[in-house]
Length: 208
Image (cartoon, rainbow, N blue to C red; front, side):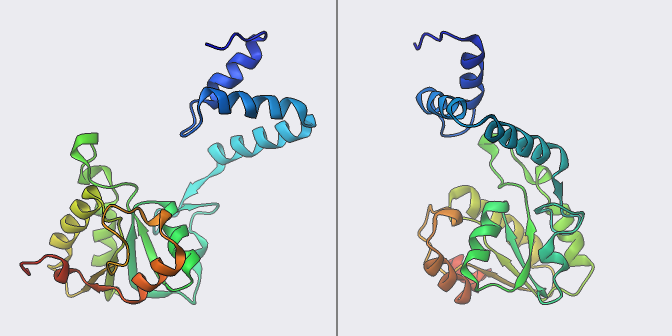
């Protein structure tokens, strides 16, 4: 175990190492880097993190992370409000937006159904999704959750709810490999999978 000559450095390293993917060695390198930099760098970083935590909002319409009560995508009059893409979180919105191939709006669930992790339907924004559907104006729901076990479980759960409504229900074409998260797919493959999206029923094998 590293022997620290400073309790302040030890505390900083301990806090940094709590971040995902950051081990003790990386945390120490980051802390020492900040010490070598001008104090304004640490002050800017600290201020940005505090503002992020205290001022960030969630869009009242789609539940995406936003600086305002309603996000820029939902406010954009050029977006097709009749097509609603259902995703897990902000990372998936960013991945899809990077492709430049989707022009509808989004609904962010805030996670995926995962009984092993204690996440059930009530923990996600499914009730809010169904309320949006009930308000009318939506013609297609595009299920764009990752093709993992949890993603497929959530997609199927939503399909069972949505098929009672007069909607076109689609999903990503299988250019995205089974087990892949959307955020790690290259934008060309993901873009093609969005353009060539398929009826969700065709993924069930046995039909309805």
